[in-house]
Amino acid sequence: MTRVAQVTDVALEAAIRPSTRPTFLNDEEAHAREFLNDEAWRAREAAHQERADAVTAGWRARQQTGAKHPVEDFLFTYYPVRPTTLRRWHPGAGVTLEGAASEERAGWKWYRADGDDVRVDTEGLLQARGSSIRFITSLLQRTAERQANFGCFGLHEWAMVYRSDETRHTVPLRLGATGTDEVVEGHRISCSHFDAFRFFTPEAVPRNRLAPTRQNQPELEQPGCLHAGMDVYKWVTKLGLLVPGEVLLDAFELARDIRELDMQASPYDLREWGYEPVAIETPEGKAEYVRRQRDFSERGNALRERVVAAVGPLL
Image (cartoon, rainbow, N blue to C red; front, side, top):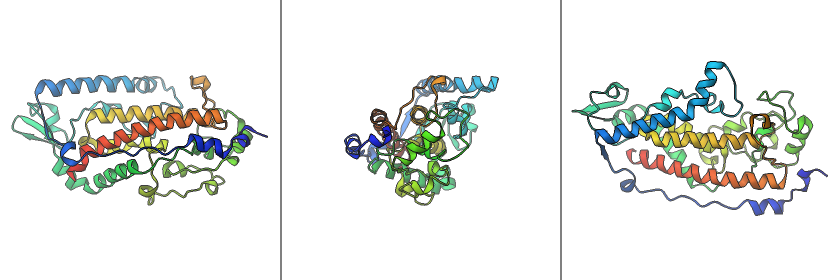
């Protein structure tokens, strides 16, 4: 009998407990308008640029040499946001920057000058992109308010190579092709994220308990999903200037940390790259996955709350 078959439903139920749901701030608490004096906003901008340079250093260095990284590059290829974009600090909606009218920022798209001061042109942005902003804000809030599922164990990556001669990465499979297929066949797959599900092999698709689509995404997205947690970064980049730069980098760092677990729990052997496997085919590996998954769920919901607090009152 394999280790997979030895994992009982009773053991899994002990690891999978419901998560707490966040309480969102009301409009008045969440969106008090701010005025930043010259010294204050320049200090925040400088801190942001230093932090952005640090988190993009590896990617920028690899671009000079042509080297590839199977874990870290994902943040710059799947989410095609340039380091220069990450480095550009925005104060967020409703914040006026003292004395910034003479700066380059005053000429950036969706900024407007008010005398010597500058702020984000929220009215113009809402007029041009209102439907997209409403969709993203609603999706983030609905996701955060939904109960998290901690029973998927990262099997989406396994389903992407199930009964296939091809893999998505030039990295060996830790259990080989046969062992990988046995793990998939020994579990119930419950992937709720469309952008993971759409990469399932044809043989793996009917094994999923759900049928995620782009249309039912708002109904299925839930905060325990690692990909939904990484996608907070995607949604923040799409909201752009409306969200403070500090939230953008926090979302990037969350996506980076989640990506590590996503690949550690995958069928790939990444020990050559310094990543010890989280063997989700074992009880111990499942427990480790769920423990870290819970932490990411809480961090993701905290970020969703900050985004909704920043943008929601505008709507």
